[in-house]
Length: 193
Image (cartoon, rainbow, N blue to C red):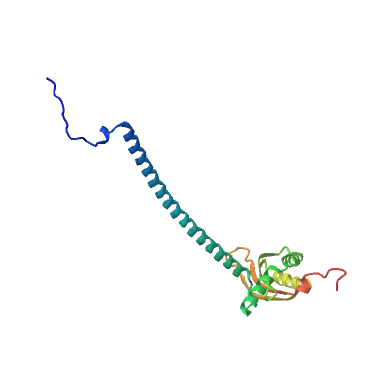
């Protein structure tokens, strides 16, 4: 014998509903789910839009601050202090040092008995410190005299000298300060007074 299932209470489960009712419930569920997703998307979009506006505002403030700093940097001070003016003038004198004329004057007075080891310019004092080496004192004095007579320098002073005892030729190394005047070093241009 077969067992039969007798259910006197009518069950309202989803599976026991007629298909039209199932479709209506499914449609209502999907509709509610869509409305919920739309509302959450709207809130998410609103939050993103607010964050974007905050970022744009902070970016605008940063750009404005950068422009203000750049403008402050571009604005030169109304006056220079004495120290700044002195530093600028010193730098200009160093940049405008007449190197080619000085080197030409030293090359014209070069002798085979004397070798130039270094030239150290001091533009603010208008002098060049010269370190050179000669075979003997006569060659040293001859070189210093030729510097004096060149007409390019205003004054030549021997500062110190020493004999290198370890070298078999015993060369004489000496230091001299050679003063110059810009007007004497740089020849005048024809047609100008």
